[in-house]
Every structure is written in structure tokens, then in C-alpha cells.
Length: 622
Image 1: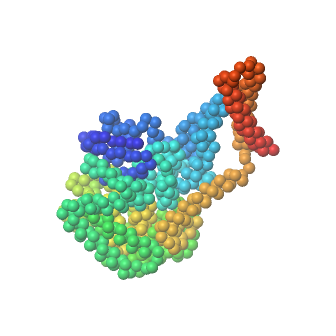
Image 2: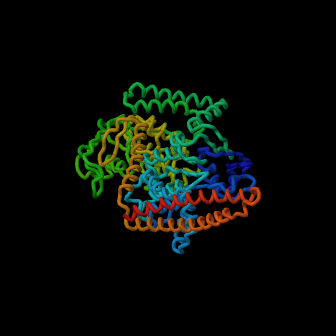
Image 3: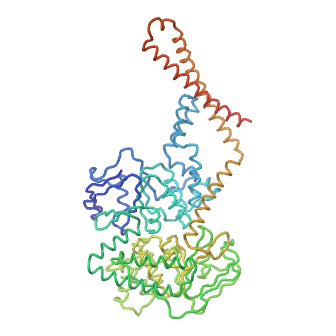
């Protein structure tokens, strides 16, 4: 389907690809992975002809349908449902032609167009668009909201729904889980499993890749290597490859020994709770993949303070929110060593809970008590946005401790891959991922006894996610974590709380249980939407439109019957001519008999179609 042949690409003086050859076949789902800057998004641009390369270096069928997840969406008055439907541009074009034919009363043309409309599943298109919106977290009363009324994150979801709506032979998804919560990611991974075309997927979420792809294309050193299997299998194969180098092997054994020691300590105190057992499995998996990350540029730990209180923080009968209450009657106590993950749909109040625990948000009612030595390490996008853009990473750390030497600060920042001149660059030059790394460095340097993290993996590449996961595992203080990264959750927390329906309660299960609940719920919501639509009385506008369509359909069929009956009459008259039978039967006679039979069958079929349309019209008129 798609082939690269000796592909070469140089951008901005940097060689991204050198003599790359790769073939992707029909129905293959490929994860595109590699460090930031290796050319993943550029490869998509090559496929979409946004970057010119030698035409002989890329080939695919001329009629291939390629869909691509755009990152931007204009703030317009177009309704959400119509925006999603516009993803199927061919269907929209046919609808516009139908309207034009109706206005011109061109019934012959209408018949042809309705046949095409039906073949494109046009009658179920709106239902499909609604199911996509439900799956991605939209409520039914939002379907007709204008685009301008949605926040940037929700507009990204609308772009994703529009992409999924588009009929496609090859789908290109660049970080589709950005701005999605865990519920929507679980639904999306299930949708991708059922997608029949080929797909190339860029993602830094290893569990999402494991769910969705069966091949990994690894971008490394200006080349692309294709591995069969999901991301976990790729890590294992890559570890074996790296182990062939003796120096790497020695480093690998040290990392494995560290992980094994950690697993043994955790097993000794782990409860029989389902999530705790899931964490053991996840840690054992981490031991296997650790060797694949020995060449990571990141190497840091989050140190905790020696002083500790028990409990660290408690909320009792607390009502949380802003001017309006978001959560009611919350009871939560966090003690040293607790490792809690928060589950629940977007907007349910997970971030509100963390802000209330930190003290950034005052309680509307109830009590908040903190231990004498309560010291937080709080990460959120808010913390990243509040970094002083005019100063450097070096200055940020220096302000925390002016007694440290330049060498000590540089060594510390080196663990977060801030090296050389980078440590003195102003933060305004940093990418989103670099800002997030600096925020982690600041948190770690302050030695908290509780980590409160709200979506810490946003903007992070795979290697930094791995390093952060290891750092959180090794942290001996308490952890409260919101994340759509299932690997991070499974590896870092021992229990879950569910935030939903304005309350907080313990979730007695693991992420697999939660996944099944979410998929069942979204399926149920889609089915409920269908039932409501079928039970709901058709509006006068919709009824009038349906009647108009049926009437034009009936008119078209009646005109066709007239033409067919005329031809059948002529065929019967010819067959009634005695001259045909004077001599032995001729080929002409056989052709006439065959023609009469075909016309008779066609008349019968059209009459049946006409009768069905008349019956439907009578039901709508009654």
C-alpha cells in the first residue's frame, strides 16, 4: 500500500532520513516511535506531500484515501455534529447535489444520487457521528453547540471525531491521545482495533500502542527499523539488540538488579488488593524492559524529606469547588506510603480534589487538616505555565539553594537532560516537554513527602515517561496521581479512587476492570441514544423532509415504470407479429424473447420498490 524506497530527507541542515526503505501493507497498524526530533511528524508530511522529496522514493496507489488528524480547528458557528459529519466529504458532496436536484425537480438525477447516498451509508451517517462524539466524551446536548463554544482541548477531540468519520484506506494519527482523558483513550483504543484500514500511529503512551498496533517502526540514527509486534515486544527485541554491545550489557545488569530489589521490597508489603497485584505484574514487566532504556538521556530520582507526619493530610465531610460545588461530602486521608490513582471522566472533579488537598482551592464546607511536616510536590499544567520564562533552568534551581556550586547544579540538571549551554538558555526557548522536565526538577529538588501529580506525562516523550515512572516508583513518600497513561498508573499506584457523580469513593478493582466498565458504559450510552431517537416523535421539519424525499423517490420510480412499460409494450407487439414465425425460429426471435423476459423482471422489481415507498409515505402521513 505504502512504500519508501531509499528515502532521503534533510530539513534545516539536519539529516532526518538517509536511504530509508520501508513498506506498509493493507490493514497493518504501525506505531511510529523515536525520540523527539527524529522526524516522526516530518514523515507524515512526506506522505501527505507537504514536504517535497524525490518522487521515486515514495509510492502508493493513486486512488488511496488518506485521513489525517489535524491539530488546529477554527472557532466558528458550525455545529459540532455537522463538523464531524464534514469528515466524510464525498457524502457531503452527494447531499449538496441531492438538494440541488430537488430544487430543480430533476427526478432522474435524484434517483441516481439517492442510490449513491445509500451505498455510502448516508442514512446511518448521523448516527455514526453521534457515536463517535459519545465515545470521545461529548454529551448529547453538546452535539448542536457551535465550535466556538468549546475549549481548545475539546476542539481537538472534535478534530479527532472528524478524522475517524472520514472513510480511509490509510489513517495517520499524530498523538491522538493529547487532550483525552483515560475514559476516552480506552474507547479510542477499542475503536482502532476494529478499524479495517491501515494506520500509522504516533504516540508516547506505551499501553495505548500495545492495544492498537502490531508493528513498530523505530526512528533512530536517520533510519527506520520495522519490528513485528506491539511496543512491549519491541522493547524486548531492542534490549537484546543493545545487549550485544558489552558496555551496554553491564549497564543493563545494574538496572535489572535495581528493579529486582525494588520489586522484592514491594512484594513484601503488598496487599492482596487487585490493583496491588496488578502493580506487581507491571513492575515485573518493567524489569524486563529496563535494559531497553539504558541509553536514555534521563537519570533522576525524586528525593523525599526526612521529616514526616502521619497522616499527611485529611479532608473530612468536605464540599469542594469554586462558586458552585463540584464534589460533595469528601472523606479522604492520605498517610505516608499511600499510592493512590484517581479515576473518572473529564470534568468530574479530579483536578479540583488535588487543588483542594494542596490548599490552592479553599473548601466550600468541611475540614482540611495537614500534618506538621506536610510538604507537597505538586505538578500540574498550571505549575508549568507559571515558570519564569525570562530566566534559565540554572537560575530556577539556584534560587532554591544559593549554597550549591555551578558544577553541582549542572550535574543535577544533567539528570533531566539539561546539558551544556541548555542550562543557561531562557525558558522562553524551551518546548512544552522541556518545561515539564524543569518543573519535575524543581519539585524533586525541594524534597516533598507527598507527590500530587495532575497529568504529568503531557508533552513527554517515551524515554522521559519511562524515567518519570522509575522515579515515582522509587519515591518513598505518598503519591496521588491523575494520568491517562495506564502504564504509569499501573506501575506507580496501589489503589484507586473513583471521582464521578459529584462524589469520591474507593474503586475496588484494577485498570482492566475500569476499562470494561467504561466500554460497557459508552456502548450503553450509544444504544440509549439510538433508542431515544427511535422512540422520539419525528419533528415537523424532519417529517416534512422525509415526506419530500419519499415523494421525489416515488415520482422517480413512476417515471421509470412508464419508460419500462412502454418498452415492454413494444416488445410484446413485436412478438405478436406473425412474420416472425413464418420460417424457422431465428436469432432475432430469441433476442426478442430474452428482452421481453428481462423487461418483465425489471418492471416487477421497480413496482415492488414503488410499493415500499408508497407504504412508507402512508405511514408518515397518517
